[in-house]
Image (cartoon, rainbow, N blue to C red; front, top):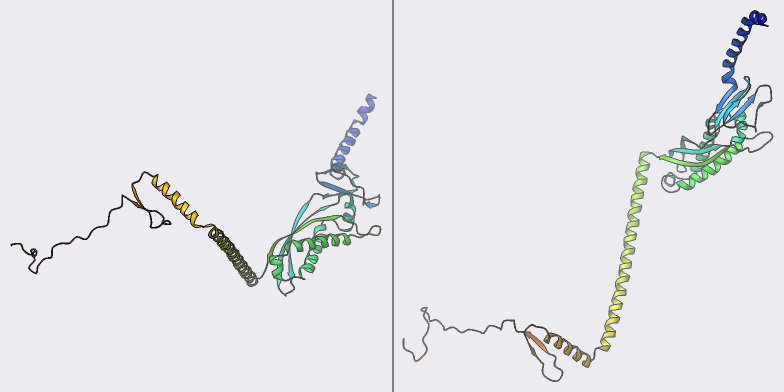
Length: 312
């Protein structure tokens, strides 16, 4: 046995080295790593080609060296596209759109066989451009620029889901749905400069008109409030006028006199003539009116005239 090993040891060493080199060379073609959020599709050279339904999951996937493994991202993806649209009023606008979508990992074999890895450029982007042009062509640039964005986005999203599904038809299954459109968004709408300025001025004028209408409504409400307030004051005076009797006024005058008389300030109270006269109060601190002072008249010479019967 020892002699046999010594005799064939060079051949064994050469065989082992050949196997090691072959394993290293075939390793990338036989051992594959599928990252998280991805799925793979196998193409078997001698076993019917692409597997339509069966797919390996994440992690390490072993295949024959002569087979191929295609890896797809099945997480939610976001792509952007810029589309030129001819509107109903004859204007051409540029719409920057984004689409959020994901792939069905259980049906990647259909996508691999009928579309390929560049499915966005071949399937989603042309369908999105066609549906956007078909829907936006029914509106004017003013409507798209100002008001109906959410409604238009929902319409394009719905039609795009149908278009993607109808584009993937096979002999055995019709309408295989592999791509799911989650949301379509308008990122920017670019109008000709003159049209954009005209629409902005129109929106400014509309806001000004709405402000004036609001001011008119506020003034009308203020007018109604003042009418109600005046009616309330008139009703109050009518009620008070019926309750103001002569005895009530006398009693209020007596109460006011008593309160003033109880104050520490010096005062003089004068009662009016007759039985119905109300008191009138004079404060003692007020100065008495000045009496006219008569000064002796001066004669024409600047001297005082003497009283008759007096000697100079």
